[in-house]
Image (cartoon, rainbow, N blue to C red):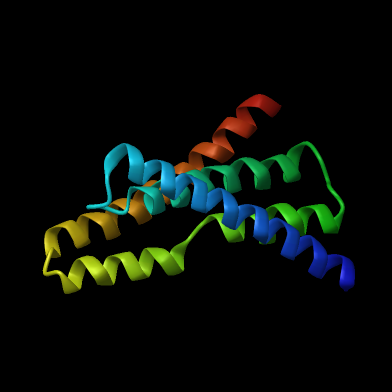
Length: 127
């Protein structure tokens, strides 16, 4: 149990730091008028989840501690659906309804598409 907690906490801290870095970089590149960093981490995190899950299913069976570190910890800390929700509400409350709707639909669609793509990439490498 302690090993699982340490694995999740370590991965979560690393994922959160990576998310912060991506958000800062995206803000510097594209500005702060739209939550680009959140879109990037959710789509990239979904892609990585697809790669990792397919990899674990077809190539490598890591220890439970490593699986918890990567999936629950790192990717859980890296992706940001709580931040996503906050960003949506902020856009909505600024009466930017079309931008909010585009953000909502685009983020969900692209994240799911990225997960499929990640799985397909890994399956293509395995076969």
